[in-house]
Each structure stands twice: as structure tokens, then as C-alpha cells.
Length: 349
Image 1 (cartoon, rainbow, N blue to C red):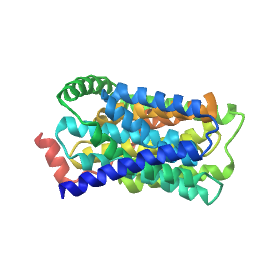
Image 2 (cartoon, helix red, strand yellow):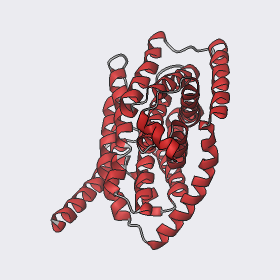
Image 3 (cartoon, rainbow, N blue to C red):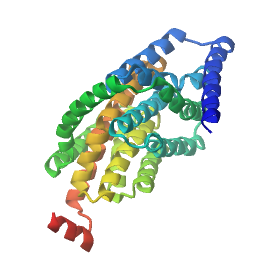
């Protein structure tokens, strides 16, 4: 079977190259210089986080075949997913875990985000074709490009050093999940909501508010966390309020929120308390989400300018700060019932 899989990888890599060359030749690019700058910016951000030139290049290039054919409307969202997947892959290599499982881990978050886009396309015209094509191209090409990039001993050394540094930073940032900080941040979020509601000149259309409970429902289904779903609803409402309606910011928020919420749910499943599960989730996924958000901000700039970058930043802040803080506050104010086995495990420890 090894020769077959080798031939299959070569075939898909040739298809990747042919798709890029054909897109460059047959499809006029309205602003190729801006696209090059966006790809270079995404590569730079990925390189800082991954500390591996090949993996960073794979993450930046994987969406390009579909971008060249269908436009760059989905580049910000999909480059964020690409960086999340590359970070999960590199982390699995460093820890000696299964790389296919690591690559599959961010997919439910992308699937939930695409489901929201699909549902919203029934109401307003969105560039769904380009979004689906770009997602499919990334899912197909990214694993093969990363495998081709290799991962030697020097990469392991650099990766472990950076992983230790980033985990120390986010171990400190994870304190936002502690009750005192989560309650304080929730209060700040409430103030922002009041100020935004009365001061923001452009209120979202009335129908767009339905996207917030839909985002909360997707979080509930994919994380099995009712309080987290309510927290996602509240954070999504703030995103809608400060961006003027459903758009790329909400999609990015949902992608990052599902990634973080699923990480916390995995730690709860392993027996951690609610607070510690959120802290562990932030430590594990915080750096990946931060750099994916920065790459999305850069990728959104050529198409939408500074406003698009700010909106992407709002989605990142809402997912990485407000969503876990709101969840922590809800767990503090409305603690869940603990089972006998869980209470016994806590007392025993």
C-alpha cells in the first residue's frame, strides 16, 4: 500500500500546483498584489507560531487554489482554520500523538461555522460557493503539504521551546476563567453591551439577532455545555452589536469559540473541574487561536480595509476572552449538579 499512497500524494500535489497555475492564467485577479501581501502576512504569523518554515508555508498556501478561482472572500476565515489545523498537527508531532486525530480535531469547529453560513445563505446572498470551495481545498491539500514539509529534530527542539514559552504565557492568561476574573470580565462585557446599544450608530438588522442563538445552539451541540452555549450566545450578541450584523466577524468568533469550547469539554471529560477545564483549554489552544486570529485580521485587510481587520479582531477577542469569561461566570453563579463519582474523585484527590 505504501507505493499507492506515495503516488496518491504526488498526484494531489501535482493537482495543487496545476490548480494554482491555472487560476493565475485563466482567472483575472483584481488585486494580485494585495493577495500576495495577505498570503505573506499569514505566512509570517504562522511562522512565528509554528517555528517551522515548511508548515507555515503549507498553512498559508493551502487555501490559494480555491482563492484564485473563487475570490478571496473566504480567505480570512479559512486561513484561520488552516493555522489552527497546522498548530494541532505540530503539537501532535511534538507530543508523539496521532497526527490524523490532531488534524481531525479542528474540523467540527469548521463544520459548525459552515453550517451557520449555510443557514444564513437561506436569508441573504452570501458567497457560499467560494467559502465551501476554499474549505474543501484546504481540507484536501493542507495535510499533504504539511507531510511534505517534514519535521526534523531541529524542528522538534524549536517547537518545544516555543511551546513551553507560549504555555507559560497562556497559563497566566487562563486565569480569566477563575471566578473573580470571569465575573469582572462579565461585568465589563455588560457595560460594553449597554454602551454599544446606546452609542453604536448602526444597529444590526432585527433578523440578524437570530444568528446569536443559532451560534449558541451550535456550541451546545458540539460541546455539550449548556452554560457555555449561553455564554456563546451573549458573546455572539456583542459581536453583532459592534460589527453591525452577521459577517466574517461572527464566523471567526464561532470557529474560535467552538475550538476553545471543545478543548475545555475534552478536559471536563477527563475529570477536571469546570474552572480547571477552561484553564487547560486556554493553555492548550490559546496560542493557536491568537495567531490564527491575527492571520485572519491580515487576510481580511486587502478586501475590506481597516474596518474588516477590526471586525476580525472583535471576533477574536469575543472568542478568546469574553466567551470563556462568560462561561466561568455562569458556572460560578449557576453551578451544575455533581455526580457521586465526581464528588468522590474530588474528595479523594
